[in-house]
Length: 350
Image 1 (tube, helix red, strand yellow):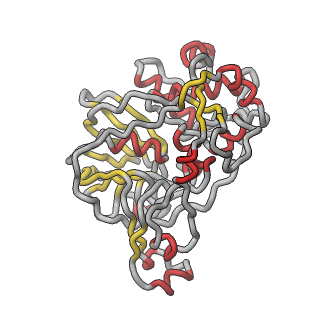
Image 2 (tube, rainbow, N blue to C red; image 1 turned 90 degrees about the vertical axis):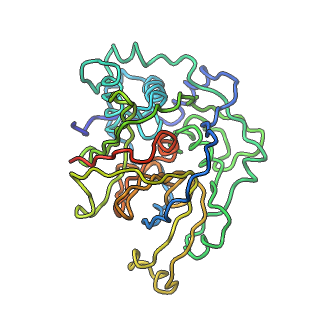
């Protein structure tokens, strides 16, 4: 699939003006996390350090201006609800949104397509009932935690929680942070006080069904999940290994363990370029949390050191590369971890 598409980049404030008219004063629904029976703790994965703090991504080239920003955002929200993830909701149309739309057509038995045409606008582009309100609470502020650069300092913390309210709300509502600011330009970012009411997408969705297999398309940087009847159930963009020799293309792996909010093992041998590694000289346990290097979910595979997991830097998914694992946004990883089971095949395809 050709990833080079002209993207639409709305002017700051456009999304806010559109969303204000759509706001329904209901609470933003957090992703449900169903309680599960205790499972064995996964092996502490060795993985690259988290990406640096993300700023607004470069504005892609625009798609035809006949597609307004609020319509593009509406399409992305509906794709996200259908588990055809655009990566992050931002009202811009780029390669990940095109892949998500193509997957949605495939799920629904439509002819292949990845363009926003009149038919897509009619089926997915309605802006009614897609936005809701999120009220910042004192509990949100109390849950924030620092995110030190030093691995040693991170290992001394109890939890690597969200660093800002901006980060917390964006992740709960599957938004890129720049888009959250565009929707709420008058909020005092990055930490609006308790009582601040924010306009956000309503991303409630049905859980994924029981899966029969996962395919990872290395060339497309996409993860496809299939239901018990072999039908496409989800598409999630992913990051892959930077080193070609560490991409197990052609192999069929299996899920052996999975967990929410896993620990992470920092191995200084994997980071020889980091001056701190030599000084530490030993492995460190990094506590769980959304800013843990493997995010909020870990799905361990039967190839040692390999797994599918989340990330503290959702804007970088399918752009940056890992040491070998398959990296998803935290919200996509949180969906997937509830649908896997022991022995689930994971095919790594070109």
